[in-house]
Amino acid sequence: MLKISISEFADRLNEILPVLIREFAKRQAGELYKGKITMPQFIILDFLNKRGPLKMSDVARFMGVSTAATTGIIDRLVKCGYIKRAHEPNDRRIIKIKSTSKGMELTKRINSQRHKMIINIFSKLSSTERNDYLRVLMRIRDILIQRD
Image (cartoon, rainbow, N blue to C red):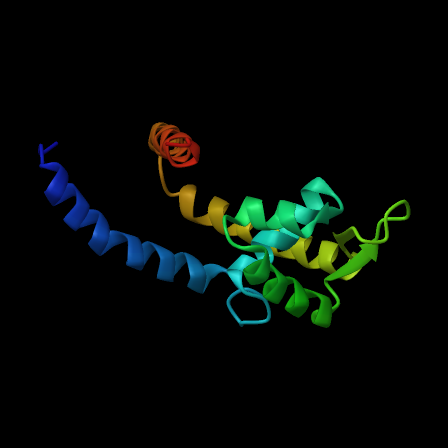
């Protein structure tokens, strides 16, 4: 394999990433690609399904955005019936958000579609290529989530 500089690597990645994102998005049949739900909305909905009812500040911290920015996303999800707000019984000042059955079903459907898409694409690679790809992605994930 050719040895390239980090700058050349960055140039190549800059060319490849938009194509990958576009092509993966096109294969995301259903709600995400048709614009029924945005990726940030899906990420929050999926997070709520995995973690249960959470305060707005918890969701904002997870997304790495302000509570105000999160509120707009949450408002749209509430309007669509995917999540609901509920007051804490012991402290009515605390409002938690949680997924509705409609939101849980949507998340399940999108995750199932993504699973099938991944199988379809990555079945064309060898087991060694898939393992190498996964190893590199996991390393990149670890680097990205490290706090400076």
